[in-house]
Length: 448
Ligand code: SF4
Image: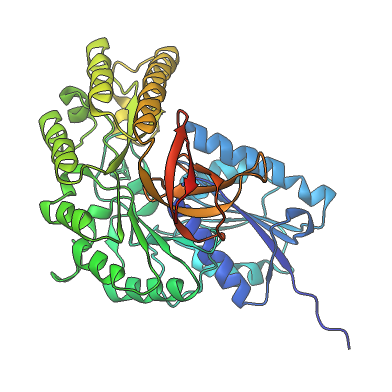
């Protein structure tokens, strides 16, 4: 008798790495339930689009992907299109009406039921919706299929956010902040290390809140020390640290623990006090400047990344000049700039003095131009120095160049290093002498 053919599932995950981890858990659950995972959506029976709805651009990208992949129901073998994540969590009624081609909507609290939901769908017609409270957080007992290259992985240490910034919809889509138990995180990291992961990227909406809802001994510092003790883990990178949660003990640990990358992503959003106040951020200009000075003093080689919002309601010409000046003075190694997106359901959406799209774009361009110049100079200053670099394969342009990332470059968002002399295996960490640079990338040769 012929064996039953496995159903094939393909997934596209949009938005941030936190969303990617959810996608990887869904894939792990499906793989455990006899589904075959494919990266080719043309051969998939089931396609899942894991969406983001943080800001306008992210929503548009999600809708475009859904419409594009809905075509596979006509020209390929796909019979079930699933939309999961933040977009249906936020707009289930509207999406159900506007997107009849979608078979199943799954919210952020229901994705661990993916296999069960697919089984329920079999033999039924019409659209199904599973949008409950956004209160789920995965644990190490759920299978997770790491979709990143084998040498790195994200480790999501908490879910949700309790910070209530006035422009942000995330707390409504992901619930209040909750930490994963420390032992569960160590167990997952050990498992990842056994599978060959060398670099752990620590994520959650705000990593500095880690442990605030757990027993006293579970702090971010303790967690990082335990992770650093795992054999096989070579780099630990800290992403998304809310400024007022960066304690002196955390700074000392970053400085003193060799496995923790000298890198910190601190989303600051603005520098002008009136804007920070309306944003409901807890840090003011003076505290932010002091924090940056302290980080640079304690860890002179640290690479700092931040993200900023331009065009927040009421942002005056003076507020924006203060922001420009701050960027010039702070010389961030990496900078992400977003135009303020007016999100219904957030306090900022109904604030007076909304800034026009034209002004937002203009301010965005000005900041990005300044950052390109600053980044070029910072990269140029690295010429002649050595960096630890993880080799990631051949460059897209030519097989004569290897590419990699230094310990001061996060995956997917920061620049790259190109290696034009020396050989190394993919996933290997090598010492590289930097010989040249561009706005965002570095070039160098292996010296060990
Ligand atoms: S810290 Fe603020 S911006 Fe970040 S997810 Fe929480 S509410 Fe949103």
